Length: 243
Image 1 (cartoon, one colour):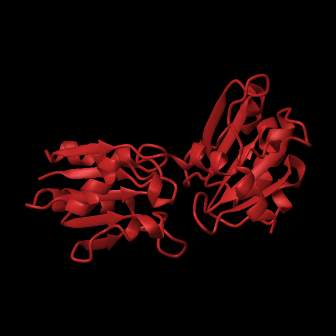
Image 2 (tube, rainbow, N blue to C red):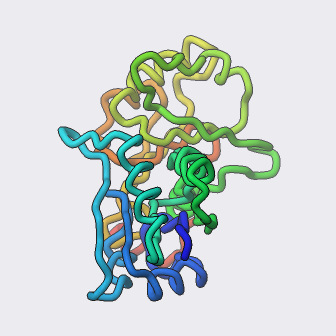
């Protein structure tokens, strides 16, 4: 048996990979995060045991505890799926879990998922790259643990292109201020996408100077750059949103 580190994608179960869906159907136990979409969770058969290890406000489950749990389950005769929102290796701590399993001699496999850093902008009609507008994009976390070095936002502002910020809602005001201090224009377009690809998707658009005061709820993917002014969603989606 093995432990599968599986990316659940951005939320829409139709965006789950075929391999991920098969592993969920065959699993004995699923260890899942809080950000896995309800539609994806509904694909797990009723008889499969579920363990919720999602990190929430007031419930900060230590990563070391999750790694220990995966090792213990992996040493049993079980088919274990570690289900993570997005991609397991994009701010999902999948690397830490893979290292723990490797050190314990537990067999594992990695199943990539569509990361929200590109899926959320796409769902909002925002291309993270666009010829003549943005030739590159940077994905960065807006959340740092105590003791970790801060992100050098001022230097990042000089890189140019599109900046995609994950887990940055709480600190969005200071992030905007640092980017502006680093040279980003105050009127740089911003799009913040919450619950991307689901029925509850919400898109907030503003200028960088107004980001700190914008009505954005967590968790959301924040896109900063000229491309954030685009709205290339299917016309049917645009009309439905307007209604």
